[in-house]
Amino acid sequence: MKKATIVGGGVIGGGWVARFLLNGWKVSVFDPDPQAERKISEVLANARRSLPSLYDKALPAEGELTFHSDMGEALAGASWVQESVPERLDLKHKIHAQINELAPAEAVIGSSTSGFKPSELNEKGARVIVAHPFNPVYLLPLVELVGDADTCENASDVLRSVGMYPLTVRKEIDAHIADRLLEAVWREGLWLIKDGICTTEELDEAIRMGFGLRWAQMGLFETYRIAGGEAGMKHFMAQFGPALAWEWTKLMDVPEFTDELVDLIAGQSDAQSGHMSIRELERLRDDNLVGMMRALKKSGSGAGGTINAHEAMLPTPEAAELPVTVNRPVPQSWTDYNGHMNEAHYIEASAQATDRFMEMIGCDADYIAAGGSYFTVENHVRFLDELHEGDLLTITTQVLKGEGKKMHLFHRLHGAEGQLAATVETLLLHMDLNARGTSLPSEAVADKLASYAAAHAGLDKPEGAGRHVGQRG
Ligand code: NAD
Image (tube, rainbow, N blue to C red; front, side, top):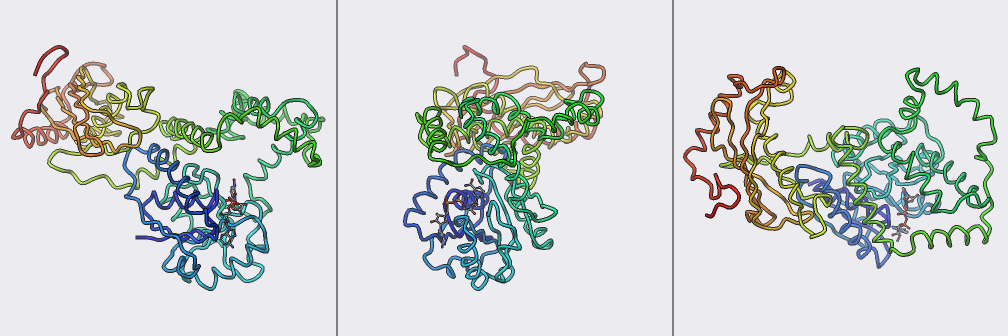
């Protein structure tokens, strides 16, 4: 099992712990704060309720987490070391001198620094690259990499394997890419509040009701390309370029952080969000992020593409007597006001099982693109037990009939303890997508389906098969 060592386990270090641990890595922590273990356990609780919900497959079993008061002991055997101590260059120099001496020679050493350049971190002989993540590290994929090209390349492979998106910065610069943009928005925001143009809440509405939604899926330039209409980017630049010379921006002029300004902003922020604790705000943020990222997963845009790429690397469970067609945690967004999985999502889960089974018999994306597919014509769901957020949901699929145009399936949905939580009986007909009518499947698909049907013919008829609403036993 691969091992990561996290030096400094605060907000960001705790997020790194969760990212590696939930992807099956062994993780050791070095942090002198006596509260570090408690704080990290709270970050982990948030990560466990959100990260697995991004995927339709199970993540690897969690690795082992250990805490150490001796840095050498923490670093032994690590292939990744991530420093996330406070943003002070003298402290980073001291810590990296120790890491350099004690870490395995082949380990990648990353610093979470938001602002320092690798040349500054390494001016006393360290061998660290910048690996700058975003909070919450366990959910947001972006990591900006800056420094030695070979090390950044190795680091990229590791980060992809834990579901992250490495972005290698072409030249070092203070604060890398994303924080330079954020700093510009932050400076302008401070002016708008200091000058009484808006409150913190109104400024946040200006972001989240409009361009914030666009940025999450297309960023800045792709969004502006659309804004240029059919004529595209050149037209957009001709139209809005001159505005840059107007008095729209005070960017380089920083408002002075007087007590008055700090009190104004802190007071407005309390009025805006003080009714919720930081942990409650974190959970709200995480639930929203999961919902948005799952939407992006459907189109493969932005962070959704990273989730899809990572999911393709996750192992599919071995075929049992009955094929396992779904093996995934129940996402928070599938649960409702009763605290359990909402009925609509039993159908969604069984549709995923059907899709997977169709792939297994060769009715995959290429086959569908060539004009053949199966359409569901009937479903019957039996709800037998509750499923809760985060429960591992496993679905097995039994073929009741598979001949001619018909495919008759029986999905069993099992909960975390293996209990039968629901069954979904599904009848599908093969379709010619061009003629929009029923048709026979290709010979290859028909053969594969028939082989499953023959293998399952010897099994008992499942309890509940053939039932309809109102029928007993
Ligand atoms: P933090 O204050 O929450 O955590 C710092 C941790 O380092 C604390 O737990 C502290 O006990 C520990 N620490 C202090 N001295 C130490 C030492 N000698 N050895 C080991 N551990 C020590 O800070 P943070 O927000 O997690 O920031 C850490 C780093 O991550 C900074 O470089 C920061 O720029 C960067 N960063 C922060 C954010 C953010 O949003 N907070 C985002 C990206 C990157």
